[in-house]
Image (cartoon, rainbow, N blue to C red; front, side, top):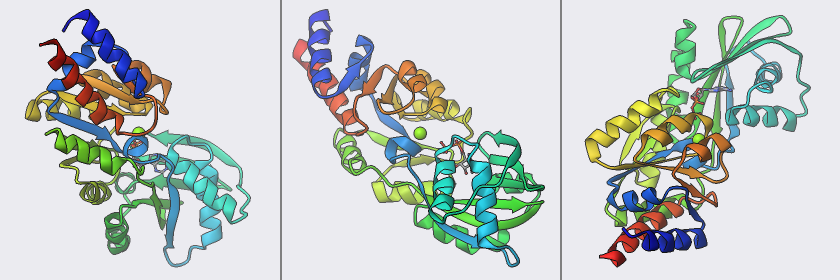
Length: 292
Ligand code: ADP
Ligand code: MG
């Protein structure tokens, strides 16, 4: 491509809210075979709400919710805000917390009022030696509804299953349909529950799901998808998406996301909408066509 055509293409991108940080990205995008998308904050709003809380017999709702919210008040995960907001909405005061720890990809723990609290994914409970089988039916139902099941343990005993639900952005469905029309495969990469991820993928017509990946695992997932399909664009918004954005042939950051993601990306979508992705690919194809 000539420098002029790249300049024109870059300018047209800017007009539609697609910022090309590297001219190379405009040339590479037309060759993309697969678009891999982060889930939380990319496909979804990244603003989950607490939807369900079911207790083990003998535990009381107010106490459990206050304790887990107190722990989550120390966490920066979007899930944490959902739980804290739910406790606030019920007018609960949050007890004091000591020894807070975030176990990346698993959950959080701390001491509250002299008891030990752990909140996180099923794999976190399994690692703690707790059997979540009592909630198997509930977890399946919640996940099939696209909600993320989480568990709380108090003093080494399973106390509750919780679910959070993160609304899908209203432009996501259309963006995925447009990518399919351009002949691309669409994949989702997420740390979330496998069943939840599949329920959401089914709803959106996503072709492939890589779920329950640890933050370091996103890069491996990108590598694997590249081997399978060819040139890959990865779209993400979070700090833990930065390595995957760098590993992709073209890294695309959501402009409303974290600075770390934006800095690691080749392309930035100025709005939160994913429609910028098919638009950028179409622009890449048009730009290169015009030069020939
Ligand atoms: P994701 O971007 O998919 O949320 P993370 O690696 O941040 O990936 O988290 C993976 C999983 O670990 C979450 O889906 C959740 O089950 C659990 N988790 C992480 N942080 C928290 C938290 N603050 N409270 C409860 N669970 C958490
Ligand atoms: Mg995200």
